[in-house]
Image (cartoon, rainbow, N blue to C red; front, side, top):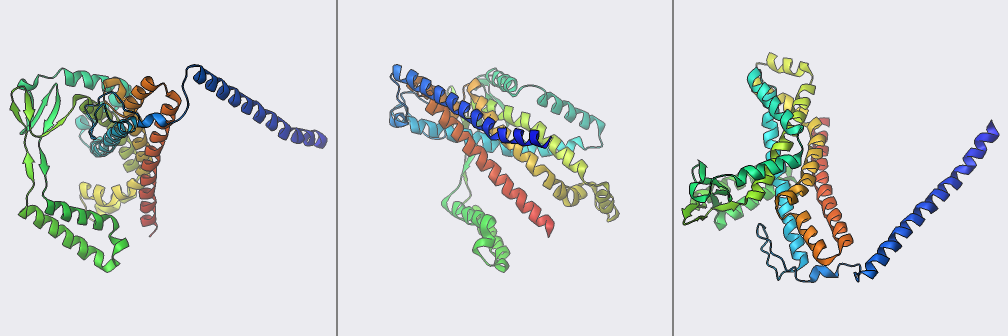
Length: 369
């Protein structure tokens, strides 16, 4: 028996070496075949095409783009659109998900049943179907001259969402920037005893700057066949954001509900014995403990939302997937385009994951004190 086991162990390196050689041969064959096909089509590998003029227009972008601009600028414009959708989607889905999760814990059976029905509907239908549904709904809205006004100064039509926005003066921007720096890195740039007074002083300066130089609001108004002033959100962006937020908020609500229910019942009883109301118990006792269990799952939801934004190509929003797809069809550089797409989404997801992991580690350190 010992001899058999020894012989089998001796054969394992040989089997591994043969397997490795077979895999290397397969990779070599695929690479050689790909290069031969590209050579026959007159296509050379490389990223030199990024500097060439794109020759197509992008309308709904944060970064100004014209056909004369390069492919690299087109990719950057699409990437900024993807980042904007991902950041706004994560924030809004988190806020709505927390609200829905709290409502799922309500003692009112009607509220709990309505929220549960919403969650089941959103989680059990494909995201792509929801995006197509919201795109169809928005394009079926009334025209501009008959636009709905759900709130004063906010208009909704088949051309998208138009809403007012503030234009702050220089003083509020400087004061707000100082306040943000102190909030994010106060303990690193100042002694611990000076952090709180500095933050209070910065907050007071920000409030005074707003009072002395209030922001100017750009309110939209109908002129002819379109709106002037205000900020216009395209139908495609509105549909994409609505679909992503409503779909992933359902998942966030279940994460919140499960984490809250995972807090031991003794914590609720101790808080009630101290005379705390249910709302204060949830805010001061339960949520701080539940948050430690939520963050890893919330990180996964944020990653799924970022990756799900790639479905924007189905409703015509110029995200990075759509832009790179157009570039690939024009240049024939499909391998480089796919490599860029994979690298960009990998970088986005790693940045998101790192930020949430750092926040989770900070929560765990607080809990150990």
